[in-house]
Length: 242
Image (cartoon, rainbow, N blue to C red):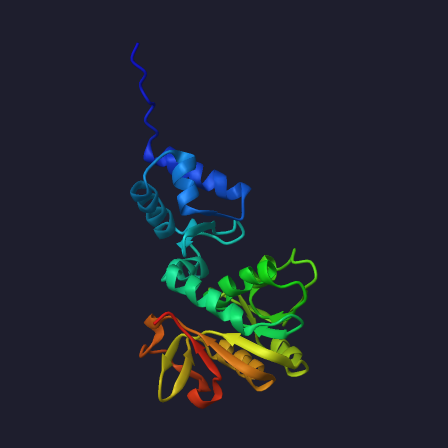
């Protein structure tokens, strides 16, 4: 008697990937290939499609589900999916500049979001202040961490907290290190932002911290954003993929 394998359709296979990710924080792509009994070529193709649709973050050998509270059509999730592999590499590198007990300012950028999600895997005692809504949610269950919001008004599209209340709160706090990204970076000038409100909040974090770490992927080098934030000589480390 001939035994035939039942062919699973692409849509069912991709739904199975999402179902698995709902049960676990992340899965290695090699493991996904074995669980679904398909080739790595097929898995990579599925993940590229899911990432383009805003459902997953695919990079650095594993895949993560974009959290349900983060709309797949939001500006934040679309930015998160862009250059995701490079951002994962940068986030991993940035961990080397953190030590137990640090007080950290972390901005609302997608690269810093990925960096923040990795912190509970490597540290037990950190004090974190952020104006990023998704960072607050990601760290809400990090036992041993003290996590504080800047407060303020929600900036539409960026999912960040800005404005006079946020600035007043941040002016009263000092940190060891500030981890941030930018809308654009020009080597002889510095960083630039898409929003003047973001630039203003980040400027306060910069002035109230001892060390400044720019997490920026290669696509931001030489690009254009209108509002200046930090000059090049104010940045202690530039962490990038190239």
